[in-house]
Structures are given as C-alpha cells and as structure tokens.
Amino acid sequence: MPVIPVILSGGSGTRLWPLSRKQYPKQFFNLTNGEYTMLQETILRTQHLQKPIVVCNEDHRFMVAEQCHAINIKPLAIMLEPIGRNTAPAIALAAIEAQKQDPDAIIAVFPADHVIENQQAFEQSLSVAIEAAKQDKLVTFGIVADKPETGYGYIKAVDEASTIKNSNYFNVEKFVEKPDLQTAQQYIESGDYYWNSGMFVFKASVYLKALEQVSPESIKYCKEAINKAQSDLDFIRIEKESFERCPDDSIDYAVMENASNVVVVPMDAQWSDLGSWTSLWDIANKDQNQNSHVGDVIAIDSKNTLVHSQNRLVATIGLEDIIIVDTSDALLVAHKSKIQDVKTIVNELKIKNRSEHLQHKEVHRPWGKYDSVDKGARYQVKRITVKPGASLSLQMHHHRAEHWIVVSGTATVQIGEEEQLLTENQSVYIPIGETHRLTNPGILPLELIEVQSGSYLGEDDIVRFEDVYKRV
Image (tube, rainbow, N blue to C red):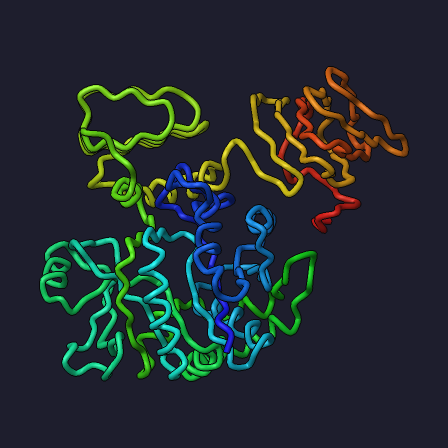
C-alpha cells in the first residue's frame, strides 16, 4: 500500500509581506538559514515515502518545477489549479490522481510552508498516522502546544482514558477556531488541546468518500476537471470551467469537522507554520539581546527585534519588540503585537491597485528573471538575466521599442527573419511592431540591459507567436 506525499503549494503567504508576495510567496524562499527553500525542505522531509504529488497555483508552475529539479526530485505530478478553491478540492484532485497509482493509496498531505526541525519525531508521528490510516481513519496531526497561541486553530482530543486501545492516537472531540489569549491559556492548561497543524494522512478512497457525503458537487466537478485536464511539459493543467464550480471549502470545514472516523496523532517535532514575522523570530537564531538579523544590520541598544534586509544597511537605535523588513521596493516597520495586521496592508495595496502585493521588482520567469531598474513616463530600464540554453518567446509589441545592451554572456537575437549574435558591450535596437526573440546559446548566464521607450510599457503589451513554455 503506497504512501504518496501531497504537497500543497498554493498559498500566497500574505502575512510575511513584503518578502512574500502573491507571485513569489514564502514557500519559494529560504527563511530558516538552511540550504533549501521551504518547498524543498517539505519535499525532502518526505523522500522516504513515494514521489510526491504537488498541487500549486498555475502562476507558480515553473518555480515549483525548477526547485524540484534542483533537489533531483521528479514528482509523480505537478497539478496546476487554474483558480484557488481552498484545501478540500485541492486535496481531492491529488487523491484522484493518487488512485491512478494504486486504488488503495494512502496520501500524506503537507503544506509547503511549514518548518519541522525534528525529523525523527516527525517520522515517528507519521508512522503512527499511516497505521491509523490503514484502519480507514481520517488522521490529522495535533501539535503539542508549549504556550498559548492565538494564531492557530485548536483540536480537542477525547480524554486519553477513553481513547483507542493500544494506540498512540486519539479520537477528536471537536475543532475550534483561533481563540483569544485567555481562552488559549485555558486550552493549554487543560492538556486536552493541540494546535491544528493542517497536515493529514488517509486513504485517498476514504477521503473522497467522506467529501462526497458532505459535498457531492466537489467530487463531481473535481473528477470532471481532471478528466478534461491537459498534460503540458511536467504539468497537469486542471480544466478551469469545471474546477471553479467546486465549493470553496477548507478540508477542516468540509470533511474533518463532519466525519465520525477522525483521529489526532500528537506531534512534538519543533513545528511552525511561519504564519507571521513573529513566528519566524521565534525559531530564528538570536544574539545575546534576543535580536534576529538577516542582511546588513547594525543594532544599538535594541532588544527582541527582527530585522530582515535584502539590499542595504539597516541601523536601529533603542528599539524593542520591533519587526523591520526591508526589500528593494517596500519597507515594513511594525510592533510585534500588531504584526498580524500585515494582511490589512496587503488588502490596502489591492484596493489601491498597487503592484507591491503581487510581485517584487525582481520578477522570475521560466527563462530567467528581470529587475526593473528605473522607470519614467515614456521609458523603463530593466536588467535581464537569461539562463543558459533558455529562450524568450517570439513576440512583438504594439506600443514600445526596445534597445538591448549585452553586459555579459552571449545572445542570439532574432529580429524579423534575420538573426545575429551579440557579445559583451554590443547592442541592438528593436522597433515597435517588429517580431523578435532573445536566446542564450551559451553555457553561462546572459546578462543584458533593456531600455524600453514608448507610450505604454505594461507587461500585457506582448503578443506571443511561439513559446517553448506554451504561454502563447
């Protein structure tokens, strides 16, 4: 009976703004000063099981594929959600796909943005969960809580004296929403409550049956969306029209709170979901004044601070319990007690139609990346990096001309029907309306400066004719 990890990588991580953004969320960053990103750590944590199924946002597909390739993991499938429909339908997609491998497959569901520092304790709890899943249980993991926490939901377990004999898991009495501090303290003192981890183990068939009982339309439209799905490179593109008809439900609300065969396995593995900057401070290395610093930071007479600087020197004087996050285009300064209100800032950016909640100045593409260096009324300057062997689409623009200057590497440039090779310090001009393509034929990254000029410089002024990444 195979155990297939299901990695949920669809979140946008808005509570870690301004570092985490919708088009490049927190799971693709290395936030723990280790060797790997959070997505990579999640996959590697489960590599003793079968190859994983990754469910992600369509916009993140190339980042997922690239990060899997970097750790020599080829997933069973990378399933692309065309629209977010919460965890219940996302897990249903993976369960249906897992049954193609084995009708009796067990799936172990893990969000891609959790930190677990004690691998041995994690594997011990996972083994208990797998044994319970073999008995047709719907298993969730309850984190052994060491303090009152208002940022997590809680699971109340049935008293140990009346629990399942000869096992290390307990029946679940109820799930409760995030409490206030006083209620959370009562939960901890009772000893009957665990933090709700959002991690699960069950047979794919058992989960699908439980979901169908409470939401038959979810099963209907998930199956329909997979039947109409298309394979594309390493991806499975879920059909949008059917999938968006699925109810927008979490697994807790749709399944776990309604089923009678739900059990909880305690886990004490130094877990965190990194749901806020304070939770990152909790697990970070700190100096003698309990300051955690990443980047170029000088702190004088400061205590209990977290400073994360990407590009420049940040100096603090006389601060306490303050969070500072400095990126190339946004600066966050907040008191720890108010850090959950970061989501309010993200909502304000959305209302004002600003781009800082969507992407960074440095934007990643399947062929490489670009960084917006300067911008004015009728011009924009970008620094572009193209991976070895990669190629941009054959495209044209209605409203802008472009001038490319090679900084390092070698570029093959196609303009119209003509092709030319450019090397360091050489340049080329692409008029408005002319078809063109940029390719890096070398074995080193290609770096160039692009100067755009015209009446409209938006990214949607791209008409693609050919594209190896199928974005036409």
